[in-house]
Image 1 (cartoon, helix red, strand yellow):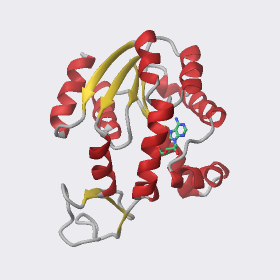
Image 2 (cartoon, rainbow, N blue to C red):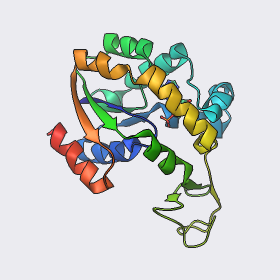
Image 3 (spheres, protein in one colour):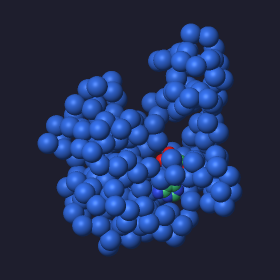
Image 4 (tube, helix red, strand yellow):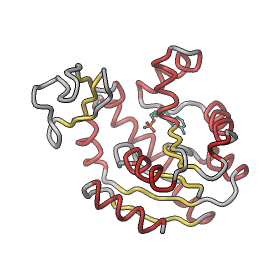
Length: 208
Ligand code: AMP
């Protein structure tokens, strides 16, 4: 199964991708994760994209498409894959559509004000990566990870200004993909304003 997860930041695409990956044993390919790893490791790619990610802007289509093409050519993606955060523009979608065989799309739906609340309250452990939320999943001691005692931080692109920019970019560049995919592939809507287990149930039901 080749699957695209489409939707605004903070909708839960990454969380759903983990569940789908375990269920169907296909790799979860997140372009955001690929860029963040490159930044953390200080590679040439990382240096090139850091300021773009921090501001919530998009990396160029050429660079992103080449990266995804290379990743999809790896052996673990032969039986299928989950794309999370790609494509994000019409040129990326057109390039993908040309190289991909059959694929399905899940369209994650979440109102902007809920996205802002979710992302601006998100805190991540610098040490183990565990994710907290100041309202819905607070750590016992403010700023300190419950699991490992590491320091909690806010991702630069989870700062309010960057979130608003990401949403603006989403509306302008990514939302038009809904019409694009509706015409090209099988697409199903997923309501993201519900607890994770209920959302996972909806996703697995749709995928069959
Ligand atoms: P994400 O984790 O999917 O929200 O992605 C984090 C950031 O990585 C985005 O705000 C963009 O700066 C960059 N990025 C991820 N995927 C893409 C893409 N398909 N095209 C361009 N930039 C991307």
